[in-house]
Length: 376
Image (cartoon, rainbow, N blue to C red; front, top):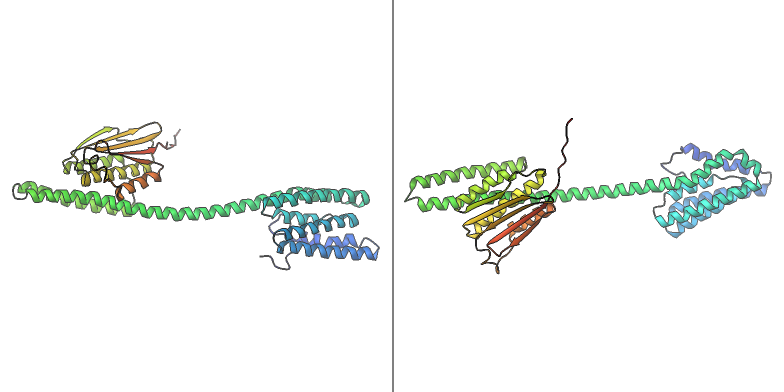
């Protein structure tokens, strides 16, 4: 906020002492005249200029522009009568601080034109005076032409930097929200898969407990081991938030499908090349969710996983021969599939569901080349 006594432009390349000189200097030009009336007119012009200059800061909209134009007229009068051209620098700095593009260019054009005309006509009337201060007049003309653009661009850059800072804060908030959702999904998926496995093995142990005690004991030991693994994964997820490789996830998928008596077939290369860990982690978690859904809901006997890394994308298909086609009418996208879709969209991927032959989930993620630094 500008104080009533502030007359000097801020954040310029000129010292405040130079501006004080510019404020005192017009009186030197005025008192060079021997006419009392001319001196009074000059003093009134100076006072009126600073009043109009101050009100141009205080006013808004067209009224502020009107006060600037009044200042331009006073500057021209001072140039004609006394050869004082330096009020134009005050106006140049003010015009440079105008934020509106149209208003800036209109006032800039008017100011440059009136300043050049005033200096030209003033030099014609008082040739000796303008010749004596010729270097300073040239500097003043350059300032009128260049300084408004410099200030306008700087203010525009500061405005954009402010908007960028606000946008970065908003992005940070969205990242935090997305991270919370991701942690929730990861916990759900990790615990869901292991608890499903524990449930299957517990049911199996219960069924064979009387007939095959040794086998039931083995299943119970597997339940204990799975529970330990689940606890370990939850701790790692919370503390380290580590990424999961696709080849590591395939091993877990094989274990859970084997426990559910579902035959697994895998086609393709399990080792993905030049893929960011985040993308591979998303694909791994989506694959785990897809297999968990097969075990829970499909009643399938076979499962086939196809992994292809094409030139422009990574494609993973998960197909089962369960009740997907038979239950097509009542098929609904639950939280698991919705979470998969959200994960894939986060890395610009997509999820397609085909219910014609069992259920086929097709996951696609654009192939992002991860640049590596070559030594030597």
